Image 1 (tube, rainbow, N blue to C red):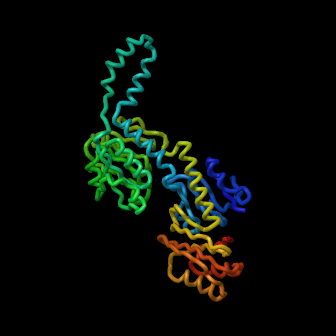
Image 2 (tube, one colour; image 1 turned 30 degrees about the vertical axis):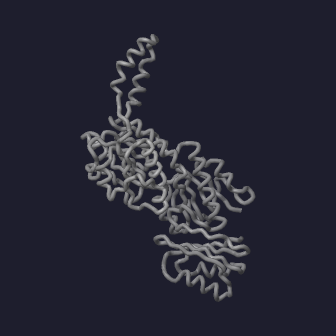
Image 3 (cartoon, rainbow, N blue to C red; image 1 turned 45 degrees about the horizontal axis):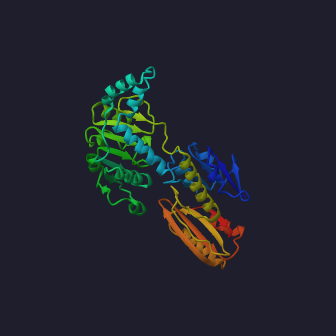
Length: 391
């Protein structure tokens, strides 16, 4: 029986992916896995029983990933599961930035005392010129980050007859195949910013990206450009944004992250972190993370982990599986195979991959693994943890 600790409200569609006869779910102590959304975890939450954490969303800044990696805890996220929800909110932000929608609505809401239809129409017609905007068609959108969300935003803009330029120094092969050939790839940030009437940010909050939109990079923007941030608050320097708005370097900052010092400032439109707040996105994230965690617990396979390598090995009928996490140093796998050979244990299939400082192995063997075998493997210097998975 696997124990899953659930934090925050995880969609029932996701929780139903765990069979009741093999899984216990709830606010459980000493769990095998934790499922969460925005709950802030601490290093102490990684009890000795914890094998995995599943984040029903893309960002993992609420999880102490480095600490968990040292303990061999695999951290999963759900890239792309909420992509459509974010894409649609970006579209809203783009439209709000170029049309006088919000001030127009605010103006109309002041006209409630006018009961004469003709008089009301005269007022509206006389005032609407104050809220005249411009169309998106023909404008250039720069997309910074061309992953699951960025590529969908690029496609959306193309469908709206915009020109689209993009930059992503870490573009994966999978993302490259997904990206439209009509998106013009830029060689650096300066080229992207200099070509764009609007810039939409779609990069994670990493050491390399925190504060990347600052006074220096904003100086490369076209005068009067619009900046949209539906990625992470930490990507932008709020003081630099305020200064750029004051001097006209950017005309508007549209963000899903209300920020002290920017709330209510002319040119700023903020939404209350609505990017993934749709019923569909919450269900998609929950189902995706549940399937990933279940496959890991039952089969040892890893997909969409932020700290361990992606690895999937089909189960061999009638075999026992060893799932082994270790430090990414020489000779550990060789030592494990030597132990198996010394015990005349035949390896039927295996797969090994590494990611930065950690490595992960799946080894299918014919013989029933004993407790002392597990202890001997665990005793190898550099081994983080060992699991035995029955067929």
